[in-house]
Length: 149
Image (tube, rainbow, N blue to C red; front, side, top):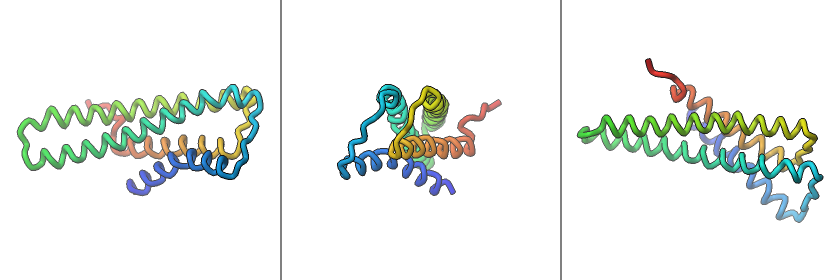
């Protein structure tokens, strides 16, 4: 299930750029309304940050797993490095959660102000927000948001 979750998140992260590339290759440069032209760039920047944070979290998790495997062979000085790696993974998960909340708030605010997203903008928003949501569910499952007592 974790592999499926990560694959679906990766598909979500790739959906936006593929949709933009498809629109450009077809030669249809949609003229954005004045409201969309004003509200879409900040939302797009948030989505880009979320993608990079999600990819950073995946890279940090892979590095953490490699660290655990390396220290399972030679355990000298392993405990501080493992705790530091776990702290980095948890900090990235919390950052990703904050970015998801603020991006959803920005999208809802934009829709209330009259933004009419095009089809490819819907794909980009749904892909990134959905992919990040899946990663957040996986992070919660593995206890990245739990407070150890």
